[in-house]
Amino acid sequence: MGVTEKVVQVVSRAPMIALLGNPNCGKTALFNRLTGARQKVANYAGVTIDRKEGHFTSPAGHPYKVLDLPGAYSLKAHTPDEEITRDVVAGLRAGETAPDLVVCVVDATNLRLNLRLVLEVQRLGLPMILCLNMVDVAKRRGIEIDADRLARELGMTVVETVAVQGGGEKSLLRALDELWPLAPAKSQPLAAIDTVSVEDTQREVRRILTVATNNMQGSETGTDRIDNVVLHPVAGPLILAVLMFMIFQAVFSWAAAPMDFITGTVEGFGALVGEHMADGILRSLLVDGIIAGVGGVLVFLPQILILFFFILVLEDCGYLPRAAFLLDRLMGGVGLSGRAFIPLLSSFACAIPGVMAARTIQNPRDRLVTIMIAPLMTCSARLPVYALLIAAFIPDREVAHLFNLQGLVLFVLYFAGIVSAMAVAWFMKRTMGSKRKHALMLELPNYHLPNLRNLAIGLWERAKIFVMRVGTLILSLTILLWALSSFPGAPEGATQPPIYYSLAGMIGRALEFVFAPIGFNWQICIALVPGMAAREVAVGALGTVYALSQSGDEVATALAPVIASTWSMATALSLLAWYVYAPQCLATLSVVKRETGHTRYALLMAGYMFTLAYAASFIVYQGARLLGA
Image (cartoon, rainbow, N blue to C red; front, side):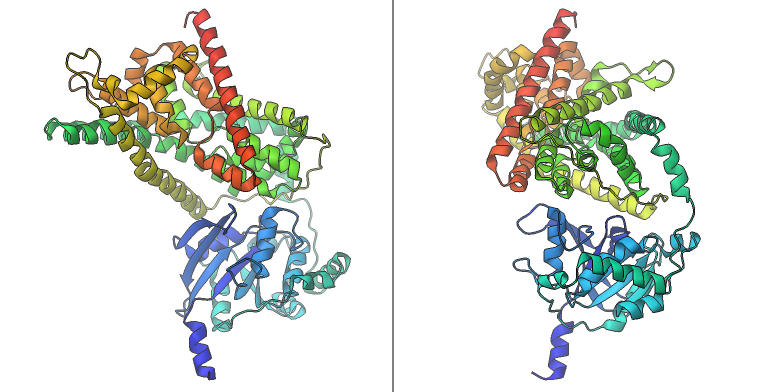
């Protein structure tokens, strides 16, 4: 094969670039800047750690693929996500070759910490580019970096980037085009990183900093001044508590207008379809099944997006690691470290990423306990159920002229989940061996304003995931439930609605015997079954069940007033208590099995959560009845 043929073969495929760097170096922001919407989220083969892959075309017209690797401090991996980064860079993953080029992204304000990883990767012999990110912040602090001298010392191309600014990636794109075409990379054995000791590596880092930077430590920065307040032993926890409380207040207050709009649109669309279709099976499927079920879940999208907005803002501005630091002492009391805070916070969105994020915890026992309690955090799938019941049974009024009563109840439900998680962690740590607490070692990034582009991408991804679930899983389950609720029809002379005599009605009445002591009627029991696939399906299921339970042409598109008139307060409170501990959805149990490597942990999770849910609902229901609710 001639030289020309080799070049054609190389450029016939887009080279794979791996973005590598310490946590909080701006690597993901650079990835978003390069790829925009041209990215996909999947899992590494055989594991459930998110991988972001994207593609882009440089100004010179050259196509590239790019992979955003999990953050790592060293290729000498201490956590499962660092193992993934190590294996990808070293070409050790089955079915995958080493990347054609490694782009090491470093925080220009903290080169002392970042350069150790750069030197380790360099020993693998892969083509490399060093991205000095956040150079604007470094300059404001008086840190001077001679990029040309740094390039000579490291023997690689060095570019300056500002990933959070438009055009901040242009120098990287120019450097990539200068290296085109990229020859297929062949890495050295992983043992090459051990040819130099850690002490010698750190000594080399200090030498490079001496000759290529002014090595300025700087005086007290704005971040330091903010941390003097935010990390204060008294003021810090109070600020965190106020932030969390205000977020839950906003979930109800801010979402009211868009939810009313969606509700009105769904009701109007259902009425329009019902008016222009003849009575029959198809009309029932569309109006009672799809519109009542799917529309009843879609209405809660604004609340979910508001919750995610605040989580993304706190994450992007650098506050979340501070919250982990503040909670380290509290969590240490139940045998966990503050590092468990971020996986648990992720579980407020969904337990699945929370379970996966536990891979950053080094101690195996702490990691397992964090996985087991992550589902007790109130995930966004519970939010539609909470919102429905709170709107139906809790008055929308102010408390002490400051707080919204509905938001206050929502805060209490979230707080109950947190307290329960801590109690379960305390119990597990005392029944699983060592009670020794592991010290928290955590890098605190600099504060900065959230990047609007990253916020928009994050919210768009969450909205897309939610709408896709509504349009696929929830839609499928709604149609299945409609079928089960519609057939067989009512016999002649029936005195109950047709659903009472359907397959779903039979299942609901059979389960009612088990759930009657906690106040659940057969309609609720029907909704619990598809809710095992996804919790938010329960709202759509109730919409379908009560739509088919109405007499005449009444359709329960507005579910809240229907259940408010047919359930007791005790039943509503019992169902709220049930969903604080509701057994996990099947997808989460599957991920727990894969993350732990054992089916028994998934079964243990389902068992203990069902037990807690039933016990809590029983206590709440019977107590509310005694109090006259």
